[in-house]
Image 1 (cartoon, rainbow, N blue to C red):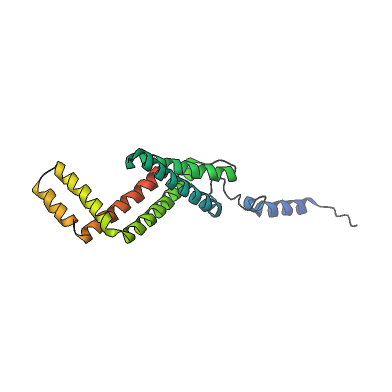
Image 2 (tube, rainbow, N blue to C red):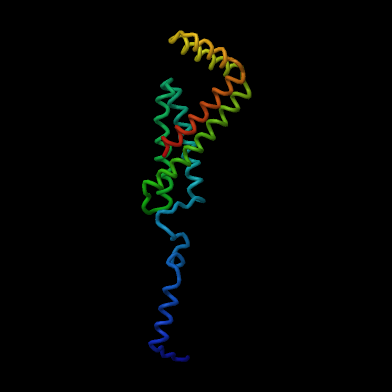
Length: 181
């Protein structure tokens, strides 16, 4: 074996080379930031949380017959996604990370619910239109005015119904994003 004697200039050169190596390469390859979300793992957990939230939404709606009460399940979805993520990846989960995980969960909830609604509209379009038309006529009956009658006549067309359903979907998207975040 050879014995190598390091001089002071060799030691300084070695220290400068070690300092040039970024800290992220030492240890875990994911150690870039403790506040970064590993999206490859987070997407699966947010999808699971979204499916669980949709199930809770359905159960609450069936038992309470109140859609407004069912919206209380949306913050549960965001919390559940953060819980699943933090359980698998120990470490601090900041409020910003939790909000991002919750927002992605809300987007998945929107995708699941809108897909189910789209299938329902495709299979029984007339029943959906009748139900929406009945609700609109009941709402207009509480406020009888010529403008309300004109609005009901305009909304009762197939294009008007699709516009109402589209606006409801957009409102549900924003609601699910905000409440899950």
